[in-house]
Length: 397
Image 1 (cartoon, rainbow, N blue to C red):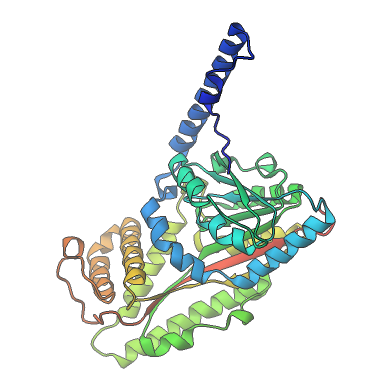
Image 2 (tube, rainbow, N blue to C red; image 1 turned 180 degrees about the vertical axis):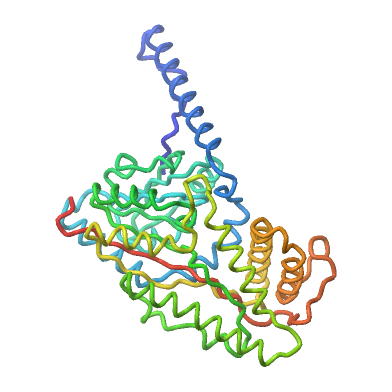
C-alpha cells in the first residue's frame, strides 16, 4: 500500500546531505506539501454540496451495492484485462483507476474479482474519504491471490482529461454518473479513447423505483443471465421496465379502494428525477439519463458497450435494508420538497406513509405517523440502477 502524499518525517534527518542541501530538501518538501494542501482546499471549495457524500451513507449502501452489481459485466471486465495483459506486458501490473472513490467500496468489491497484478489509483475530492479508502483497501488481494497496490489522489473530477487517465487499463466508477453533464461524459470518453482503456461503471441510477408487495416481489426479479444488453436494447428494456412497474402499481391501486399511493409515488419520483438534473457542480446533471448517454458516447468512438440492470431490492423485513430504505425515502422527500415546495404537505403525507411501511418508526424524526398502508417489515423497495462495461476498439493502444 502506498500514498502519493509526501512523508516529511523522512526528510527531517538525512545525514548524507550537507546542512544547506538538507535544509533545501526540507524546504522543497514543505513547499510541495503546502502546494498539495492548497490544491486540495481549492478542489473541495469548488465541490457542489449535492456532490458531497457522508461516510455513514456510503457505509449504509455498501451491502446493497455489492448485491446489486451485475456479475456478468465484472466477468467481461476480468476477461478483457487478462487479454490486455497478455497482449501488452504480462509482467507489469494492470493499472486500474477509480473515479469518485469515496470510502473505497468499489476497489474493495472489484479487486478480488479481477486478475492481478493490480495497481489501483483512487481519485476523489474528499481527502477524509480517501483516507478511509486507503485503510479499507489494506490487505486486498486480487483474484489470483496477489497483493494489491493502492495509491490515492485528491483531485477535482471536473478537470477530467487524458492526462488524468493516462496509462489506465481499466477506468472504474460507481454511483457517479448521475452527477455529471453531457460535456463531462464526452471528455471521459475522449480520455478513455486516448488511453485505450476499458470502462466499468456501475450503479448509475435509472430513475425508476417502486414498492413491491411480498406476493409480487419474487416475480419482479429478472434472471441475471438475460440482463446483458447492447445500448439500444438496454434503452428499450429500461423504458419497458418503467412502464411495467407503473402498470403493476396501478393494478394494486385499483384493487385497494382505500388509498391510491401510485399517484403520490409518481409525483415524488418525477420531482426527484427533476432535482437530479440540477447542476451538481459539473454542469446540468444528466441524472437517470447518464448511463445510456455514456453508452452512446462510447459507441460513437468504436467501443463495444454492454449494459445490465442492477437494481437494489431492499427487503423491508430486514432491519439493515429497511434502514437504507428509510434513508432513501428521507432523501427523496427532501429533494422533492426542494423541487416542488408548494407541494410540501402532499410530499410530507407520502413520506409518513412510506416510512411507516418500512416497519420501524423513528419518533424523533417521523413522529407517530402510521400510514394506512403500514405493513411492518413487508414487501420490497426496488430501486433501479444500470451497470456498463465498455471495451475499447481493438486497435486502441
